[in-house]
Length: 477
Image 1 (spheres, helix red, strand yellow):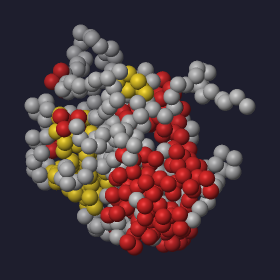
Image 2 (spheres, rainbow, N blue to C red):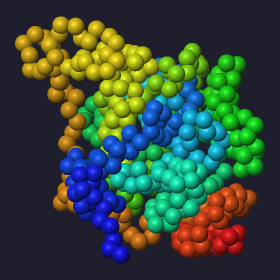
Image 3 (cartoon, rainbow, N blue to C red):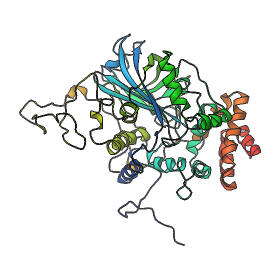
Image 4 (cartoon, helix red, strand yellow):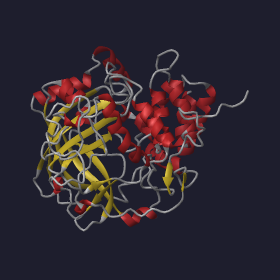
């Protein structure tokens, strides 16, 4: 039987479905990669009306307070002086489940924050893990399909995820985190948050630094064992959302310490890991945490739909002094998140009270569209250039050029053959013995439901990370 050729929706053959088109091996993704854009655009429209991912969530308002001076790294006004406070809205979610799913399932947790700064909104759209399963966004729709329901049975199917992971070894680091104790937090106050991607800071001298964002819980990490989580899923499926609401109502406001890792721009070229690879961390021994401030969530929403369900985040929203990196996943999310919100809520989603800037005024030439509920900018001109005092771009906000080299091609983003196994093995060896055993048990519980050939592939991946790790899973199976 002849092998089917993958095509676009227009029937055009696809040359590569595993890597995005980039400018050089580490360069940014090119807009001309129409297959990537089609995959992401179609994926964003697969469910109506709830979010495709991060559908189940809790939310709260809060405040961010600067505690340390980081002006040498960034000119962002949110960090301009010690003691400065900025209003924040946070949305904390599971990823794979639908709106009616249980809070205490084993899943990555979304950790999305909207900072209402005087230079516009900063959306820090992260997770409770410092890494992710893939490093190229072209794989994202396929990966999320493995976390959803079997298209035939409409039931969850462990085989789908293990089949994918067995053929994508870059996922091993995140799989190890997911099946560890941290895969099921005891509550939103008891988990960390991370920007996960590498971002950039730009200072007043127009110098660029690569940065990682960390929100460390001041309540301490606390997790649920699988048995406890399963019990709660049946007895109290909204456990996390209710818990967050109740602790805030009682005035026991959860707090996180916001810290950063900083890498000078030049050091990225020769660092032992690709610093823009989302499946990797920067070891703290190389780039220690630098404290910046404290996040406190201290006010519950008055109306869930208006404030939590209609809240919309996009990594594209960064004020001057905070910017992007060549991370392939981040480059695609810059497009994909706002595109998903325009589909889900409408083209004027950022006009809604929960999403609009609170500390500055919007000036642009966007007009009309569904649900335009303000004055639509009245009689002011809707084009530029114009002779009637319309807003103009300011070259002062121009970022320093990003050096790019290499040919536009489809690059597999790694260096050595063992790159995808070193950090998962290091993580396994860091865990206490009892947690190693629970990690193995959690994996075996799920992997045992997959076919034997997939089990064997995964065992070899785990062995390459750490022999004891793989042998323990093999024994359990």
